[in-house]
Length: 297
Image 1 (cartoon, rainbow, N blue to C red):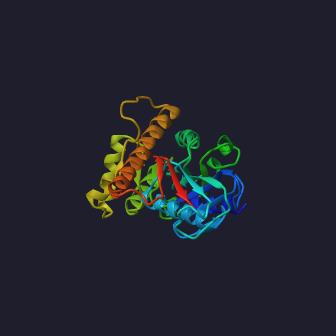
Image 2 (cartoon, rainbow, N blue to C red):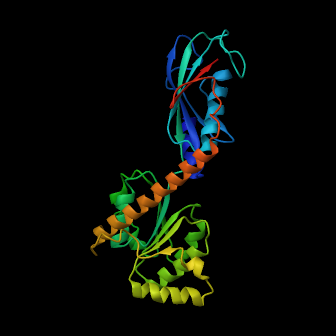
Image 3 (cartoon, helix red, strand yellow):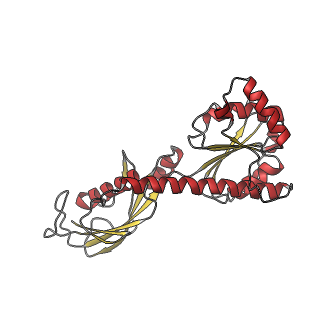
């Protein structure tokens, strides 16, 4: 189905969109209940009936994308030549309810080092709707048998098997990725930290390890020409400071909780920014509830 491919394409490109579904039909209408359309800021896939009905849906969808709206909305359109219209008369004689569901860009996390802690962390994060990148220089850590625990993942899992120079993956990550560095090799960790702080598109950089390890890393990163403000982008140790324990599962839970806090902070910041832009109500032919709009076609 075209709309399914469109949703996949938007997700792969980390672009927001809106899924429009014909929720219900009363009387005559150009499409039946269940028909779907996907709207992006610069494209539309499939159709919910064309004409004024579809134009209104596209218009409102693009307003939602521009404003970062995350809550679904219902748009009701009366298909009558006696009703006011904005994009041409559509007089099928029925009434259509459209469900507009935002397709936001989901969080992205890259775990560098899929050892005991890394795999436990991946298992937890895989239960969330995110893009999950697993990176390791050891092929035996990324075998299908070992990663079979992620087969039922909700997350989109991307496996990066890079025996040489895993730090090159840093430059390939989507903008806004949260990088978590926890490899088996401190030299590899140091190289990844250096690459990460030189990438200004990463959301956060987390490093597992002791205070002694971090002291050595700070000295090495400074010697390599990195300024103090860049080095300060690294958070270490990662996780919840008041959750003790060194078992891999405990550390993974702590780090996962810390990452979920970062996701929440990002959503809150986006919502605040959207609220600041909404100085006037979005255009609509009428509004009956915060999540329901009515348009006469």
